[in-house]
Amino acid sequence: MARRSVRAEFALDEGLLITDGILPGVSSPAALIGIAEKGTVFVELAAQAVGGHSSMPPKQTAVGTLAEVLSALNGNPFPTRLESPIRQMFAYIAPEMSLPMKAIFGNMWLFEGLVRSQMAAKPSSNAQVRTTAAPTMLWGSPAENVLPSEARAVVNYRLLSGDTVEEVLNHVKATVDNPHVRVGLAEAIVSEASSISATDSKAFNNIHKTVKQIFPEALVAPSMVVGYSDSRLYAAVAKDIYRFLPIVAKPEDLDRIHGANERLSVENYRQIVAFYMQFILNCAGYPVKIAGLGEKSQPGL
Image 1 (cartoon, rainbow, N blue to C red):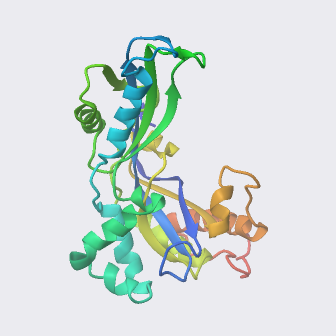
Image 2 (image 1 turned 60 degrees about the horizontal axis):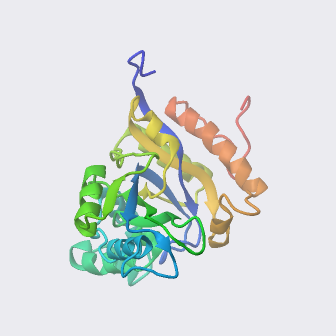
């Protein structure tokens, strides 16, 4: 499509789910539509020092320097803030929350600081309010009794909308500030944070409409994907990209995603098929309601 200069009206790809019993203060299932996703960059740190035998260690080793650097990065995180996708999520869901959550999220002008601090206290919500850092790989000595001349680590940063790869590198270099530590990009995927897709578009309205047809009890709200999806591949051919899978997930299902005993219920599988059939009809402007939850299909469908 890009080679032929063809632009799609929108793209719908993997992303967020229909959460049931997961959002605090919300009793109904919530279908979260990803209108943006975080970027990702892997920063490599390499600390140098004199190697040798572990029986005669110097005052500072490469491993010790690297540990200090990682500790410094952990103690100097990016600041928290609420970007548009999360603000919109609260605006959509707040009216359906129970008190006092309704009062808090319905008056963000007053309670934003409290909301950000509470979200930052949990890993799942902390990822929604800041660019996060996670050390993922470490290398050191090739033997138990050898001091390495170089110790390396890779830290994965997930970029919140508004932060850039360049800003992450500058932040790491300023925090490390050590001539014995080399900072650079690891040989891995690098992706800036995505643009934010519209919620007043025909495409978003059709997703909203289809969810309510197939999952009538669900609330629908925009949100942000904190992971990394294939939707970035559509950025060249579609301005608006929506990240949503009509999969119902309860708290006990979260650990199963890409884990042991990953599964869907038979009913949810049927709902997924019904969702995409109905969504195609809605996008085409075809006024037919297919079987969603126990209803009979129109003839020929």
